Length: 289
Image (cartoon, rainbow, N blue to C red; front, side):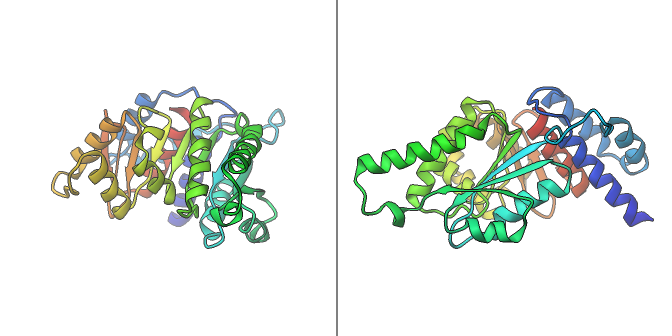
């Protein structure tokens, strides 16, 4: 019974986060952080079911496919096909209606074979496929890739940048332009994996963009701290360091993953041990910030 209750809470948290159709507005970022901070105390477990039942949108006959969230994952290359698949399929499993993957042509058949539920776009290119082309032809291919992604951009409630992306120079160049277009369109972006490698070397891509959520592991976080703060990881004052890092980048949200997750948007910060809460915060920030 306890396990069932935990599953119910998890699904309700996440469906809540993805379940408001098609809007990047709504619940304010500040209210979300404050509410979850209050709920992270001892009363959370006792009150979770009643709270979540009250705030979860009701599924009724007036709803149609797409109103519970449309997510795009940008990632997947010859070497890495698992990460974009898991990111995209997880979005479906926790309540999103549609999940897209924008990947390289080599990765597309593999990712598609994992699940018929994913909408896979084999549009990205790596350096080896354009190595014999001149600068003008390479620019043309880049423009075609951007045009293909832009056709779908306005439909997405969120983009996930980086799972299985790899570090191919031409591929990263194209993805950096996709990120700029997402930012211009005010699409929330979650950055993970090699997407973090990209932004660490090009902080301007996300600097000052409050709809960006960075999810670094220990090594990715170390590179960010060294690049932005010119210092090493401070485990003695980890909470304040994450807050300072988020503030220095310009109000992005940073989720430092570890034994205890630390999350901050540069104004509010907290350390959380309960994975149910951290998933709720992260997805609420992405969808409602």
